[in-house]
Length: 193
Image (cartoon, rainbow, N blue to C red; front, side, top):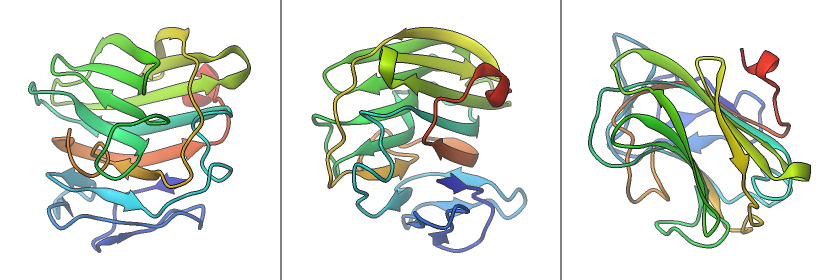
């Protein structure tokens, strides 16, 4: 799935042609800078089957460009979870109040980065997951930040992809986001650069 987030409608096109989404009523695109200006309920895809966007028992990479200066609470960038709940099978790429990138798997734990991304500048953030070794790696601006073991659980068939919120109900991202991509491969450091 690949979302440029540079259109001006409530429907957001997946440029791979498969997983179009809908922007929530409080979201919008900044007319002076065609990037997604997140300020509330955000992009939601319909339910996807585990085999379509698999973030549990398969290699994957999630990446996005983000710009924020918020210092309050955890802010979700991309999540796959049930509507409004954090439950078994849930995963999310997010940012802590102190600006560190996080990757969390429900019941598995959190991988916390060291680089700070809430400085008001644009940053490229990514998580790459290798299923065979259960290894997640966080990248910031093309550089490996941290890596660690995470035995992720399988996705739930009814889970949706959320961009800018956790389950469409909380941890709303406060800032701008652009070019969100979800790959079905564990991209290498060279590919992420």
